[in-house]
Length: 289
Image (cartoon, rainbow, N blue to C red; front, side, top):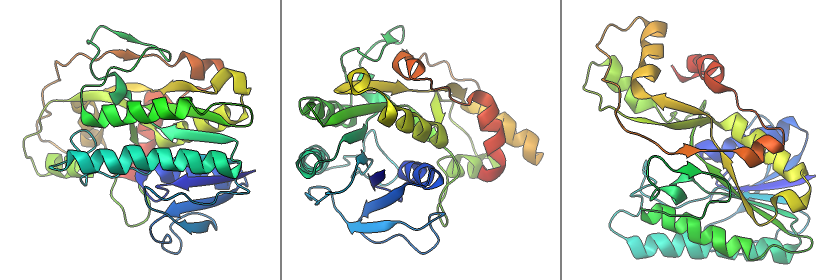
C-alpha cells in the first residue's frame, strides 16, 4: 500500500505519516519544500505541492488531505482580512486535489474536516455522523463545502471520506511547538488565563481511525463523514495536570461555563475505533513540557 499526505509537516499531518511509516507503508509527502532531514522517523518521498495544484498521483493508493491555508495559529478566523482569498485557496484548492486524485486512480481520499461544520447547532444538539452541516464561521463553511464537493465524487473505485475531527493534540515534530505551548508558558509565568473548554483528540488516535477507514468495506464509509472526538477538556483541568507535574503554584483559571454540543462517533465505533481518553493525555504530557 502507498499513502500521500498533503500538509504532512503540520502538527496533524505528521501523525498520519508516522502511523503509515510504522505500518511499513510507502509515504509521499506533498508540501512546498522537502521536509528537513530527520523530521520523520523514516524515509519519505517528496512531491512539491501547493493548494490549487493538480499533482500526478498515479501509483498512490490513498491520499489524506490536511493542507489548509490560514493566518498562522488560527483556523476559525483564519481568513484574516482576505476572506475571498481564503475561500479560493482552500475550497478551490481542495477540489482540485480531489479531482486529481480521482483522475490518477487513487482509491481512498480522506479529507481532514472539522467539527466546525457543526458550529451553528445549539449546545444541546446531538451531533451524529450523518447530521447535516451548519457552520457559523467561514472556516466551517469552507470545510462543509469541500465535503459536499468530495462526496459527489464517490463511485466505483473511488472512496472519499471526511474526517470530522475535534481539536488535535500531541507531541510536535522536531523544531516545532505543540498546540498548548503558549498556554503553558503563560501559566508558568503567572499570566492571566481565560477560561475555555473544548473537545480534544490525540493525533495518534486520529491516524489510527484513518487506518480503520481505509481498510473498511467501501459501503460503510464512501461518501460519508466520520466524527472523531475523545475528551472534553477544560483548561483548568489541563493546567492542573501541568501544575502537578512541574510543581507550579500559580492559581488555576476558573472552570469554563461554556456548554458544548456532543460530537458522537458512532461510525468510528462500529469500525472498532477506541481513542485513548484521559489516560492518553496524561501519558503524553511529559512530551509536551
